[in-house]
Structure formats: C-alpha cells, structure tokens
Image 1: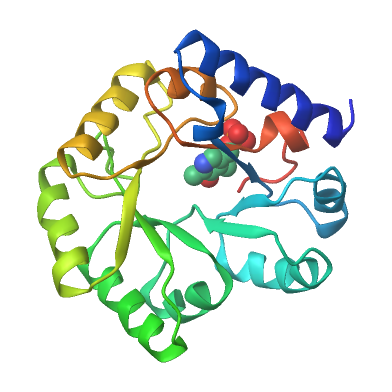
Image 2: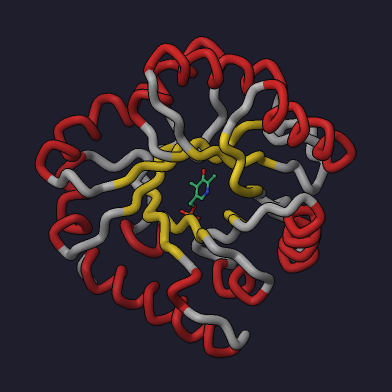
Length: 223
Ligand SMILES: *Cc1c(COP(=O)(O)O)cnc(C)c1O
C-alpha cells in the first residue's frame, strides 16, 4: 500500500463514519500527522493532493516545513504537541493552528508572539479528559477559566477543543465528554481521534481527526 492508497482508505473510512452518524463528510477534516517522517515521506501525500498536516514538535517542523510550504503553498500545518512558552514565537510563525493551548502562561506567550508577528492564528484548548498526570491539557475543572482567559485577557482566537484519551480506556466516553464541554463553551471545532479510533471520534462529533500511522505507517522512532 502506498501513502496515496492509505490516504484514500482513511478518507473512505471517514466518509463511512459520517454516513453512519448522519453527518456531512465536509464537516470532518483529516490532519495527516507527519511527525518523525522526513520530507521525502511527506511529499507523496502532498502529491496525492493532501494539504492538512500535523506535527508535534516545533523544531522538527521547522526543519521540514518551510521548504515543503514553498513547494506546496496551500499546505496547512497544525501543532498537536506540547508547546513551551519560549517556542511560542516560532510556533506562531510556522503553524496555522495551535491545538495544544493548556495554560494561561502559554496563552499569554502566544498572544505576545502574535502581536509581534502581526499575525493571528486559530487556537484549540487541549483538555486532559482522563486527568492523567503525565499528559498535557487543562483539567476539565479548569477549562472554563482558561477559555475565559484566552478569549478575554489574551484575546486569542479560540475555535475549539482537543483531547487525547487515556490509552487504556474506551475512547468514546472521553470524546462525548469533550463534545459536551465544547458545546457548553460555544466552540465548534473538536479535534479528537487518531489511527485507532477516529471513526468512533467522528460518531461523537469530531471535526478534526489526527491520523499518522494509518497513513504513513509505523513510526520507527518514538515521537
Ligand atoms: C502522534 C499523534 C497522533 C497520531 O497518532 P497515530 O496513532 O499514529 O494516528 C495524533 N495526535 C497526537 C496528539 C499525536 O501526538
């Protein structure tokens, strides 16, 4: 199977999950997660017409994407990994969406970087739905205050929520929980679902699914 074949297979599964849940497939976008893969593995996806990608590290993305962007100017890039405040300026320069805003200090750093760059990007707030100590994301209890801070104090363009459910639990309840929190806060974008569970995430309302392995194959080094 080529990367183009894999993309087609994933898009077909997305369409199927949309039909099952009575949703318009135009409402679900596929973020192809290219972390750990070199440019020559990403080019086949671009050549197949795919334009939306996710990376989890600022530095790694900086080493690949400026050149890929020159060659494929319509490509768009989401940051899906933890962001340190001292990398906020680099992230604002390179990414179109930061999916991992999870604390006020980071929101402030992004706001400052945006002001300096004269560029405003979309942000999602990452929620640690399973309250796992090692995982990024604001705890559900702190979500309302963080969303308020992002909107009113940092004036970020917050468009939605993102989560990564605990690996050892059924994902559906976490996806449903995230969908309810998004609804409660008037947020339309829901980034949830990875290779193992994106059809389930779509049934629970995902508008962005982040899929790596099912497109590019098994990663040889841990992300
Ligand atoms: C790596 C990663 C993905 C993609 O995971 P796969 O299982 O390879 O599809 C999705 N979201 C985040 C935040 C990731 O770090």
